[in-house]
Structures are given as structure tokens and as C-alpha cells.
Length: 157
Image 1 (cartoon, helix red, strand yellow):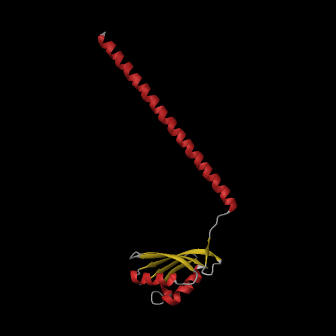
Image 2 (image 1 turned 135 degrees about the horizontal axis):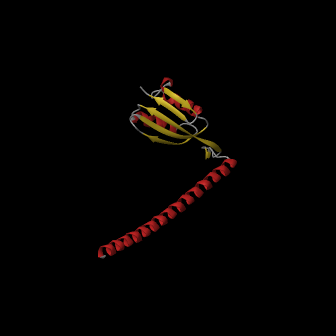
Image 3 (image 1 turned 90 degrees about the horizontal axis):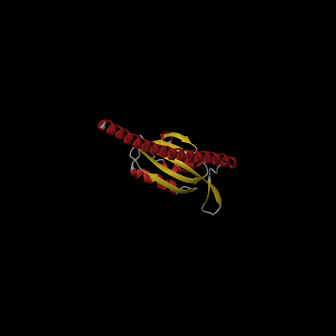
């Protein structure tokens, strides 16, 4: 009889703790559901915002001012140069910064592939035409691997 009473009491305690654990799991589940709902609402709002934004179009180019103070369209071109040493990269960056129409340049050096990001007016083709005459000692036409609007890739031997 004592054994049955202890077993009944133990089962009662286990069932009570199971019920409490289940209520805890239910609370966690409700919290996760609320978070999922909030994330879905935010995603829907983002999609709606993108649709509204696409109706008005995106501004692709910034306005900058040239040396005379007149407003011109600013373009960005990334020049990637493979196998260039730091001295020649500095020379090329100096040539670029003194080129007409260039408003800013940022240089990143790596022994395998360095980059110069150039903010300029006009097209990438015009930028290259202005740079090439002064940089014959650094690269020539046959070194140009890829050329597209906004990107120039040069590979030195």
C-alpha cells in the first residue's frame, strides 16, 4: 500500500512537471510565432517599398562639380591592375589624379591584383584615352585585358 501511494505521488509530481514544461514550450512557441509574424510584416513592407521606389526610378549617377564650378555627371571606374609593383601603382595613381575630369581616386595595393577607384566626369573610354599617353612606361594597349563602362582590367607581364 505504501509502495502504491509513493508510486502515485511520483506519477502526480511527474505529470505536474510535464504540464509546467509543456506550458513553457507553448509560451516559447507563441513568442517564436510572433517573431515570425513581425519578420514577415517587415519583409512585406520592404517589398512594398521597393515597388514604390521602382515607380520613381533610381538615381544612378551623382552630380559633382568640375574645376570651373559647373555641375557635371560623376562616374566611377574601377581600374584593376594585376602584377604591378607599388612604385608603378603610385605613378599611375598620380597620373590619374592629375588627369582632366578626375575628381577623386582611391588606391588599394596587393601584389597580385591592385585597384584604383576613380571618380570622374565623362565615360570610362575618355578616361582611358586621357591616361594612356602619360602612362606608356607602365602599360600599353596589349596589357588591357578587359574594358567596359565602369571597369578597366590591366594585366602586366
